Length: 244
Image 1 (cartoon, helix red, strand yellow):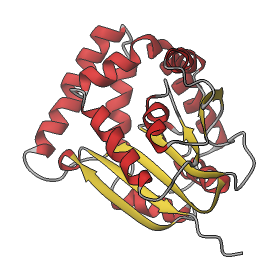
Image 2 (cartoon, helix red, strand yellow; image 1 turned 180 degrees about the vertical axis):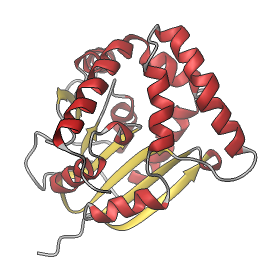
Image 3 (cartoon, rainbow, N blue to C red; image 1 turned 180 degrees about the horizontal axis):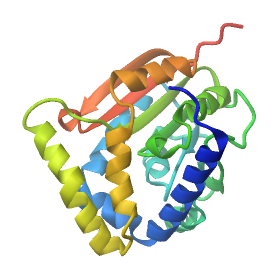
Image 4 (cartoon, rainbow, N blue to C red; image 1 turned 135 degrees about the vertical axis):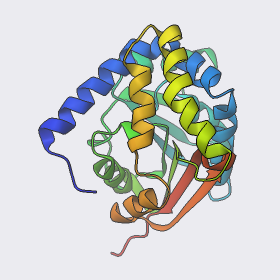
């Protein structure tokens, strides 16, 4: 994937930030409602994959939103989880959730851009993101930044929607994303554009083999995809292997 012009990237970034700020108050409810709560199961499966390789890791959660993946990752007994997002409103809700759960000492949420991650190189064991990479203004650049901040032999884990190719998942998926999701999203969030953008972003996102190629371009080795619920979503992983 070729890098997009900087002005287009900045335009998308500002639009995404504004959109998520506007729906932050309803984001968690809609996530669970519109996925029939399957998103919770997907997160648990993603964390289980990480648990096979790491004990007490230091974790970066990119596009953390309201912190659901970071909270789920507490099962790994992490030394620290740092979550970043460009939406201040989403972070405010996430911080309140974390405070109520008594996890503020373990999980920090800060404003941050996926293309300019505000951490030094080689300090995290894991960099992860759930349903966020498709919103990056430049996905390849964001993945390269995640590669930069991971230590040698560290792992990237991406949980993201993917387009199923088999019956009956493919026609049901297409109908749901093009018709049902925008309708209910608009009703419950009172935002006319957000839940049109979200299915569009899924349909345009480079998934399956294309996304695995992006991971390789970003510098990762041993890339792997685990399809969930007939390919409706996928967990992608890769390892950083230093050549120095």
